[in-house]
Amino acid sequence: MKSLYRCCAGLDIHRDTVSACIRKQVRGQAEAMLEERVFGTFTQELERLRAWLKQHKVRQVAMESTGVYWIPIWNVLERGFTLTLVNPATVRALQGQKTDRIDARRIAEYLQYGLLRGSFIPPKPIRELRELTRMRVHIQQDRNRVINRIARLLETVNIKLASVASHIVGVSGMAMLRLLARGVCDAEKLAGCAQGHLRVKIPALVLALDGRPDAHFRWMLGELLAKLDQLDQQRARVDARLDELAFPYEELLRRLATIPGVDRTTALVLLAEFGEDMAQFPTAAHLASWAGLCPGNAESAGKRFSGRTRKGDRYVRRILVQSAWAASRCHDCFLAALFFRTAQRRGSKKAAVAVAHRIAILAWHILAEAGAEYRERGGDFFDRRNPERTARKLSRRLEAI
Image 1 (cartoon, rainbow, N blue to C red):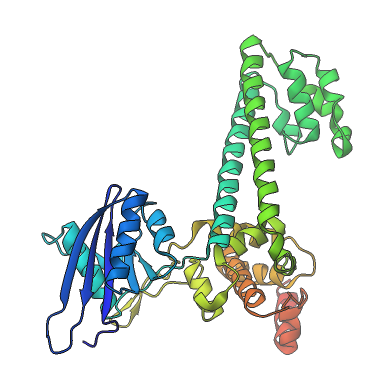
Image 2: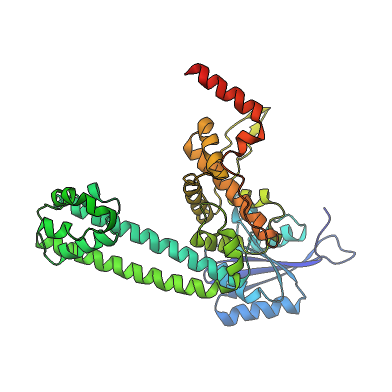
């Protein structure tokens, strides 16, 4: 097999140690020369690793994505080396032949012969955005858990606020909850906090808020509301930091937000996960496959087996599927038409994944093409594409009716 690099290195990374192996191909020798050393993971040790690699004129370095332990090593070696981060599953050792030194040798050998496929690691500004958007997701999940606990707590004292108000922590709901936590038990006074469209439900609110709260309930509710306020403040700080870091990408975010179902928050997540440079994804299909939104291939002996999508970036998949459900409720929208067209044959959940796949493709074109924006095709796109077939379909439906 022809070697791709004359000199390269492989790193086997752990929490406290890094096993490094430099592999050199010398002319006239069949076997490659190996240089091996073990380094610590303190900053001074990583600088020694960097100097050692430079001393041997190494340019190509590969490492496994071991937990979060690869991140500081990547940050130290990012300048001056071409780095490849690989999934440990692709360089799995043979049973009975696994040590740190052997792992480093194997990674270096695979790299030298061009057998490794690196993971997508965006530049540092995009990585910082990614960390913030993921932190915001976790804060929102914590917030949802607190809201669910508040709803369960209300049910224990037979306060049926969730049966009348669709959002118990909206403006009206929060006003009622704060009065409850302060000891106000008068249902009519609590229902008077309703605002907007909820005021027409005041008679139902009076019945729903007539519960049996006690001192323990008020203490628990006060603690949960304090936790909710804390999470809201934390989310506001993250949003402010996101706005600060996203300022150079405002035009790109505006164009991403032209896609139905994609708001500014979703656009920030897409930018943070995909990056702004689509050189890592040659085509839109590559991006959709990386996100885990393409059918899998499982065929043997001429038989087609399950084509379920593989696990991709869970943050991207989650936000794209949420955007797909939002787009399905848009009026006179191509994505909504695609959703219902697919749902007729495959069901609503698979239709949501299909629309999420289409949104990922649209995002790739907007990121890859300068000045590109979403152009609406209309909710009747599929009817206009083949009018004769549409007429036959509607005729058959009329006859069936």
